[in-house]
Length: 356
Image (cartoon, rainbow, N blue to C red; front, side):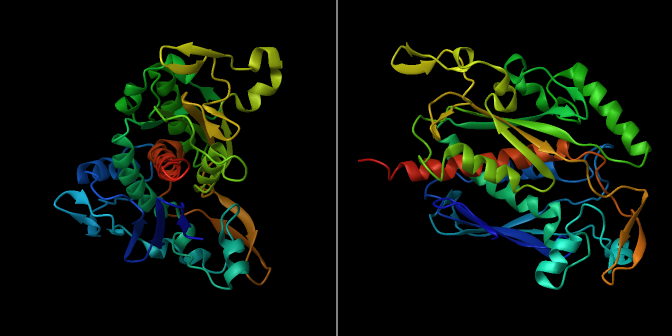
């Protein structure tokens, strides 16, 4: 499927080496202030060529709004936005036209469809995520009306980890090229990525996301639990290998007496003393911060020779070519934010139908 969401629904289209990619947003309410500068900022955070530790492909990410906006506000009709592809080098991929690159989608796309666009991976390319970031920016415009914020940052590269997000000043996230709000750890991360790049290799990492000011009561109790939809959204991002929310896998080390979040009255609000639940209980938000981690694998394209086979089953040597990220997580931060915003916006609209 190329469509995500129920009430706030997006459909993305296009390939990495086609003329353009784009998104159609359906279900956005009328009257939302439409901020094109926000879309521009979000796309600039995701675009390639923004620093020495990202791919050097140059995309200015010029976008055009075709429908759904009038006099600076959404009209309630479908919003269509296209982003032109500019800096393409399809010839960089002719050498793998009939070969299957290790850990890429080449074989699986070929066996599923009987045809594949080998130029940059076609539809499987992370280039498609620019459309998601565009839609996520529109979702953020809707969330802003309710005071809901979504922020993500790089919390780990390789074995280098930043301290827990609760101890960090997340306003510092954009102050360095790796997007880690802990300056000392950020410097080490940048040095590591630099070394990996010189080694013609790649490395993975973790992006942490935090959603603040969500109201209690968002989420469906069985199959569409809030955290389940959030996990689905994150696992649908290219190169993602894992998702956890709240205490996640580390929570298994605690006893229930320590892990349980006790309820307290805080003025007019019901709160919890701790937040091991990550803001979700029974699949429904409880009003606390929703926080989660998204694990990204090392980028599959490396500038080293690797052994594989071609369509006929013959052994081949695949040589890495083109312009690729040595570590994807700095550019993945706005993608994680976008998908989280889409989940929150969709559930916010669903909640309007839950009770009278």
